Image: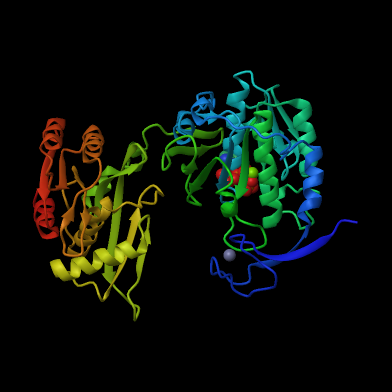
Length: 464
Ligand SMILES: Nc1ncnc2c1ncn2[C@@H]1O[C@H](COP(=O)(O)OP(=O)(O)OP(=O)(O)O)[C@@H](O)[C@H]1O
Ligand SMILES: [Mg+2]
Ligand SMILES: [Zn+2]
């Protein structure tokens, strides 16, 4: 008889305690604790060793300079946008977590990738833990991914999945999704934190042992019984988020963690009936409605996503409020940043919005996290409030300090180059102190207006 014990696990963050808690001391969520029955570790270990996993019978030490690593063997996804996020393709034998909201297109993206990898004459095993094989087949027909190199199996039990991997020896493995897979050695229910953590752990070892490049799909859930992939982030080699707005077709693939490449790279796709189509120049898409830029409350900023520069339109709408407390809505920028920008506008420019609602929207569904967009946001708010416009061929860049000063932004040159390429001929930018950088920027061809205070930026942007 296996010895069993139970523990209470926060289904949001994985925090464990011996008894029920109403509020998680780690992530602060309420009612997230679920009792999970686990077997004694020794039992699990002895079973594991029969699979030759985690065996510590031989010790071996190697000098670090003699360790052979080969991260140069990369498997291309066949999509430039995807490869960039991965840092040049999947590293052989790595395990990658693809997370995203339900229905966003995770299975579509991975099936298209599988199709591209299959065309490189590699064997792919697609574990349908959630859908039936016929559902996947229907999708494959729509995506033109009917390849003889793609093997599908409907299987939820991890131990069975491992047997199939041992038998088929695939080079690429897809587990769709990790929340639907269970290990028979863990007694807690499928989708619980203990289950997905243990299954991922084992899949990670399998990936290394069989040198099979693995992608596991995980749903992001805010609340509920199914654990979010958050608890897996530290275990896997690579975490990718697939994002998009509910009623829009633009999808953004974002690297959150990557052991073999830079993070914060993005790939942009469009969801069409034939599947996901790469968008190689997203700025053009996001700025396709340039005529709108002649209306008040609109500015263009250049933001860096990894190594790539995106030009985005920021829209602001201000108007007298019918509510006792004016509303502030920020989509695409952080709420706190908006409040700070409004405070600076009030104090340093005398723009009083205490009786106005303020809405901010960044077009294209991109979340801007860097402060370089501050000036663009401030000018959008100001032009909306004063019902004026800024010149439509102007791009605005700069972080705004609490004293109303305009602070420098990283990699100004790259941003201005991209802006010029897309037809912007003026840029309002922070003071450039470095002479060599300034010389290089002057050569780009875009006319620059250096400003050190928000009030100067307003004069220049609105008059020119
Ligand atoms: N025939 C179709 N034409 C165009 N788009 C389609 C079609 N069928 C599905 N889609 C798109 O694909 C999306 C679903 O894709 P997919 O099943 O890959 O998402 P998912 O993230 O894997 O979802 P789940 O959470 O259910 O696993 C739909 O939301 C829809 O936008
Ligand atoms: Mg799916
Ligand atoms: Zn928690």
